[in-house]
Length: 403
Image (cartoon, rainbow, N blue to C red; front, side, top):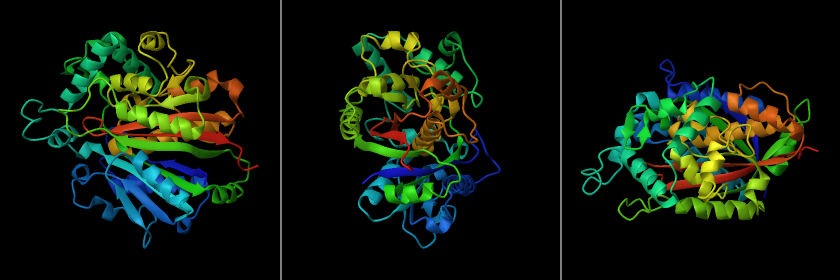
């Protein structure tokens, strides 16, 4: 069964939204998604969220989201992980024929949480914490090992960070490679510009079966392209840091194999319009690019330095700016990447609608003007956890299913 993305919505997203609760930002995103889909809240059959009680600062935090999700007296589940996983759970509910319309909300009030301390607390207190008391140390070790195995230069991550900071404007500000390298170090090899800054906000996605999606599309005054989930998958690496393989994400490679197989993609670099990859740390974009076959160790340096992955490049990666350029919604990062991908695919197909695109997305649209009105596919992938032990991915396509 084909699963479609019929509604995309978001709240304000900023480093801090002190005047709003997480229920407020979630309600704003859901309201926006319902308007985008031309749906009434009574048509939502089930809802899912993604959050962590420790981040929200209260036990069973999702019991306060039911009204914001239009989910009163409806099935309402919470995924303790990245919100892209919640989207995949919703898609499986639709594929199983349980529901026709499911709402997913990804949200975060990161400004109210001490994420670094929470990450550290997630590590083993006897074996990990005494020698690795900050979660960034795990990222530093994977980055050092990755460079050792590939022979890549330290500047690669700085180039990626500069690209994404520039693409994320006006949310972020462009930063030069020299400024990034000279920035205050978080751990050895990673400066403050190479780790995403937490953000407050929410993003909502409404999924529907193909039959229901076509019915919804008919409600719009003008014909609009529809987004479909061509494929999706997820996998987990060991949570035991002592036996984890640093310098690679083997669980992402298995995810890549499945999403490409199910989407019928044999040549990702020649098929994908662009990709949104996890960049909580700049080097993880490079690592993910290898796992998804978008480059290889021999040419990765040239691909990054030569602009192949820039917004106006051959295969743009994170034209939205990613987490580095537009803020890290933590558990809400997956739905944000998916929504940004959907908006960009719809605009590239030819839909005219009001959306505040980032500098990178605007550049991508201008660069690919000759592709307007044509079907396209894009890849979204996220990692979750202090050691990125959970990975998920989806291939989204835009086409004129309403015809």
